[in-house]
Length: 161
Image (cartoon, rainbow, N blue to C red; front, side, top):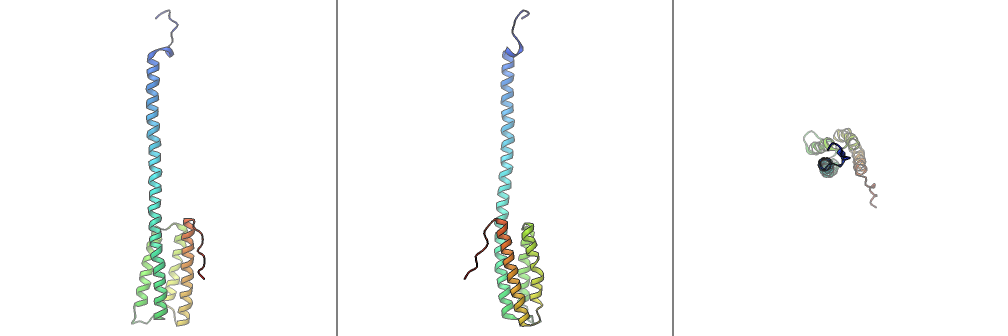
């Protein structure tokens, strides 16, 4: 086509190439967006699974703190021949360790502060000292519950009257 006014832009080949480019660009864009959406879904599902685990372990910690406090109140200062309080101490230590492994940093900090209080209960010298330390342990338990509530964005618990 020596004398023709036709350009490359007007040719059927250019139209076909443009359509092919559009199909390829659409496929790449679809793949990229689907991949991004799958990653976001995976992250969200993982977070939900860990949150459920944190709540489960936290519930066990709360129950174990209560058991430990009741055992301390019943047994009094540790006698060398009675391992009941020590066994309750070990159970609470295991649950706190599990919580510290999976909890976010703010909850982990509060949970780790319970260890010295637990040891203080275990080594109380007399019944009055024991009750003071049990009271401190229960306050620490409440601080831990508040830290977990804050992590999940829940309101503070209202005191029961």
